Length: 229
Image 1 (cartoon, rainbow, N blue to C red):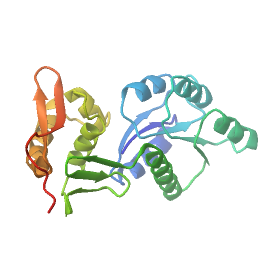
Image 2 (image 1 turned 30 degrees about the vertical axis):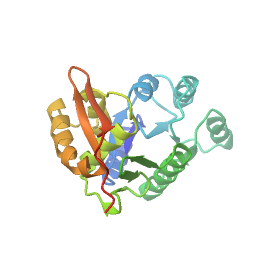
Image 3 (image 1 turned 45 degrees about the vertical axis):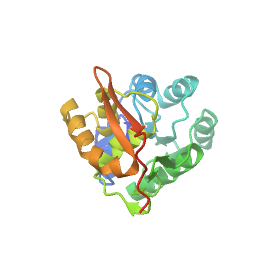
Image 4 (image 1 turned 90 degrees about the vertical axis):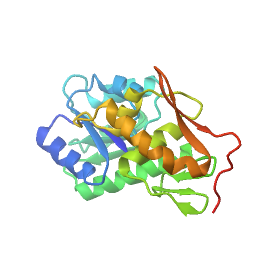
């Protein structure tokens, strides 16, 4: 899961990001509101955690801009303001949940899980192609009835490719999907994960084809029946 955390308190941002990363999630952080709408539009995030008291434009205006551009990304708002009118205002503007500071990190993680599960249920939580199935909620994959063993990075790459079937996706797009701003990954890393995935998904009748100069495309192999045992 890829999360954008917009929080201007350095200590709180660091502790929150650390707690989220301990769950195996990728977290990007910004203390300002202005970059958020563009980042949400261009990067494949699964959740926005949005503080109201940001540097620059505040969380309410940031949320307004995010929703104005048509994003349905789940948004969890954080604030030290506990007035009921603030909470109502945030929810009316399109926030999905509200958490008042100070909060327990365990509660934050629980709310993140609930929001993303709800969003996946609306979007469809199972990706399938050929003989392959990926359950995004359970974080499990199968070829036929056989479990498919994937590392966290391999999972992220395959999920991104399967969610864009029929489209060629560039290495930079994949890189953004599997890494945070603080990760020192290169496009060569994408090549490594793709090379590891290829033999793993062949029994499902699938291949990852390199389109020179553009990126990768996952497709079914004609005449190769997917394994079902």
